[in-house]
Amino acid sequence: MTVIPLVMGTLLFTAAGAAVAAPTTSPDAPDAEADLASPAAPGKDPLRERTGISAGIPIWGAWCGPGHGGGEPEDTFDTLCMRHDRCYIERGYFDCWCDARFRDEIRRFGPRMETDERVVAAATTVWFTVTPCVPR
Image (cartoon, rainbow, N blue to C red):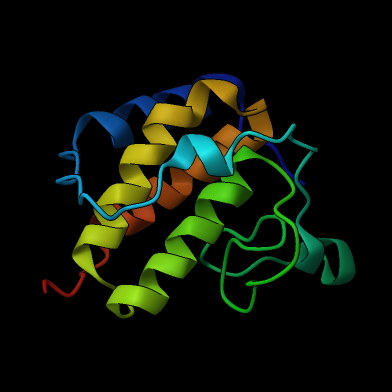
């Protein structure tokens, strides 16, 4: 995986997190702490490993990115992607609340992530900040 220099990744993560409002907590929303209780394994980019290329949306682990949606999450960020995918299943694709919760959880759990994982999470935060969502 090509790694953006740490300074750039840190700036991107900080800027992305600072500009986004936290979602309103739903009383029936599952707690991310429970999903993140197991130890994390290093993340991988299967598409890049197979082909040498990656899609416009960051692809990471078993759950992050188009066409990824199954198996055991590989690390903290992959677990958050799983929760985001499941939110879309419950509330509909591109749901604003799901995207806001995803961004909030990336900020909240960013300190648990490895550097490469955090850089991809930051890029994903930017993606879900600038991409239109569907208010429900």
